[in-house]
Image (cartoon, rainbow, N blue to C red; front, side, top):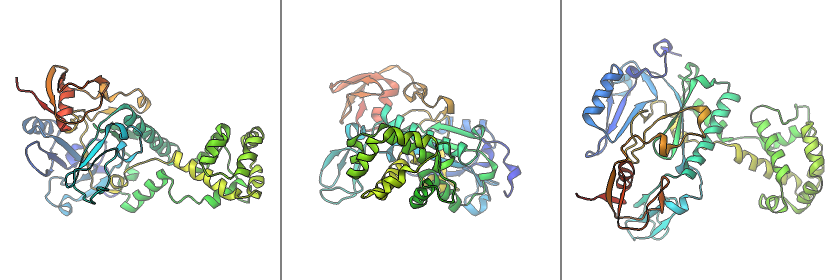
Length: 396
């Protein structure tokens, strides 16, 4: 990597560009740099920004006004996992949107355009809940697993940060990735998503061709598909196989011969597939099972963030301007014990009275709000409600 020796540790603040969004000003102030942590902290304390960002890239002159003048050194590999991009049932309960042109309102994720009038002028209100966070955790876990067990990176070079909203950021600090161009980063994303897998080849491998057949201990996507197929056959019912689009003949064969099929799979014997394929729609049924397994194991990451070698991302230790929650480091081994509604709250729990001016869920962050027009809530929750445009602070 060019100039690799300039980057010796993950933080290296003096080689990063910074950007800030303020409460009473539009746009972002960027192309800023700081010689050390103390200077950065003094700046934040004096300007109290709404959002704070730093570059995933390292530069020789990060404060220069143009990208060419900055002199790019390299960039971390970063993955953004956001529940906004994951299908969850909770969004149909607590998220809603309104068209500013025709007034149409509905619950659920905001569409690209109003289904009533076609306008793209839509206002939305989104909420953070445990189901959102758990969905993001699952995707985060998939990414970490593939980075370590498939791509050979080390856990010590990975850090996870709670984004302060509905997801996580994974940073990979490994000099081998710093100079990977955009196309190479896009290929890594495609691998994590399971894109471009040759399902016909996978079926051929399971049939014991000259290529080494799959087994439950196989590495990478081959092993995942083998284990996923095993899980589906182990837990299959008539109804869920039908839901996957499996033909009646294949469903009957799987359910009648389940024990024998599982035993064969445990011994890397996939001969039963020949019998399935001989049946009506058998090959298509196997392809549908594999496609379902790929969807199960594929990780949902924001490609734009990973491929951008000059990306600005949220600065750890600062507050998210919409939620008031902190962008905090999450221990990889403690991913499922991390509770953002406790571990990312840094504002006071002093009671504040707010007036409700919009629709709110019955519970927010585990606190029951009720239906009164005025509520007394902890300061940290009041900040969230006000920033979500559903409440206003009451004058004393």
